Length: 276
Length: 332
Image (cartoon, rainbow over all chains, first blue to last red; front, side, top):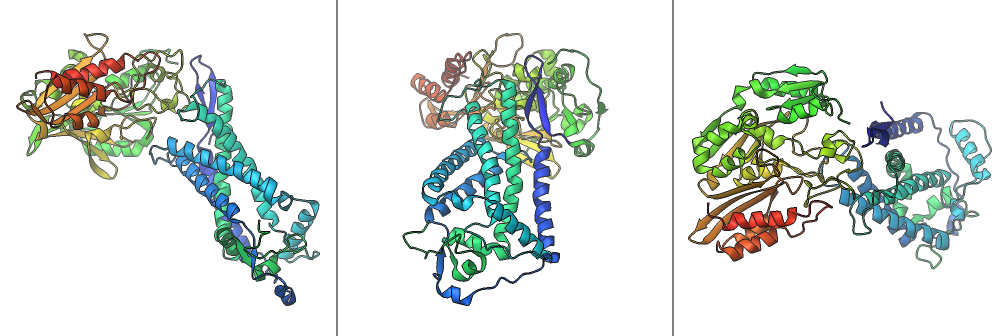
């Protein structure tokens, strides 16, 4: 198996071209392996720990707790659609399904870029970034949660804030890989004809272009693994209430009380003016 | 870089005697196998050591792929039929003169003796950057060396470029498309029959191939229906060297004319795009029009609409315009 693909330039020098497509198969296999391993882990090794629900607390919580604003949901699904379009148009030709993919690919890339720019502004100035931060307490909570899930003694962890730790970590990994794929993708658009700017493949040298293609490829195949994992969690029965919240915008009060800490995330009624 | 000439890399040579054995060999060796027809394109690649297949399947010994047969609705030409046989075939000369004219202008008599109709239609592009072995888009890389401010791109595309600007070099391909021919392809899944126009693909679909043929596939025959038999034909090829050369631009036109009215038309141009380009807009404009200077002029203008020249191939635009114009106004 190769990790990188090399070619020869007109001066007879070896130049880096891109990653080896073997890595696409490795990334897909890793994603599938993770899904399988996690499913087996949950089915056979994790000990169920019933979450106590304070019935009295239920009364003080709105029936529908707002979780994602319409703007956030629209961003999420636009990003998901563009990401899926990018992965399909980028990788189907690699596995032998040929079609005119370049235009669809760069247009989807532009949609993804614009949606991420929008999300960055929206999250920074309207939603606030604090809900996404990871602190030492999150790590000790996660450690306790893991120990208790396998039957070991550990202090009871806090309930989650608005976003569970794994969601926040996933978001940060996606931010990194997505950011890399977007930046390199924008640069790669200088290699093709688009209405956005004049084609100029000479803004970088061949070795630099090679590195750009490698970073783009590595990020893209990483996204294959990440998307497989994300879709898997999105459709798991015990996680579907979170997926539904990304469609409907709210979670019910029972899930809120069961999983979330009001200290970290105060419940607001769906449709209230404070919804974010 | 292609620096060593006339010294081919070693390969395992198979010379099957029938189509079934050839297909089995291609299936067995997949991407490692190189299908060789007349060898004129193949040996260039091998001797330049740019393509180094480990297995070569020579179709020269398969008699079933040779010959021209009359069918209920036209002709069936085996893919391994030499171009000379096509040029000399009485039925082709009499009823499908467009193909005879095109085949007669392929290269030289010696090459037409060895070259086949299948090979002429399945040959790779002549872009010299690609053929010199540089890792361009078509060779699996991520750059087109022919599309730079200093490139020598006089022979390259004015239409249909998508990252790669190479053109299809076949002379018989536009004639076959104009005659509504069909290509018979043997695949692992059985026989596929497709319009000749669909046999050729551009870089937007697959930047590494000129035709739909995938590893394991085999062009078996070309079927020409009688649709255009005896029509008014025009084929013209412009090349740098009149003795023998690939086309800079060629045009194949078939017209059904009644009196001075054009009832139907096929106009196909090659050498201007990565695939033979059927000019359907021109055909539509011709249909029902008079065969006169004004119609020819309009057809020429319409033909080059949307053309985009590279640094050194702007001459192809007036050349193509004039060839299309001449093909409409000329007397057969």
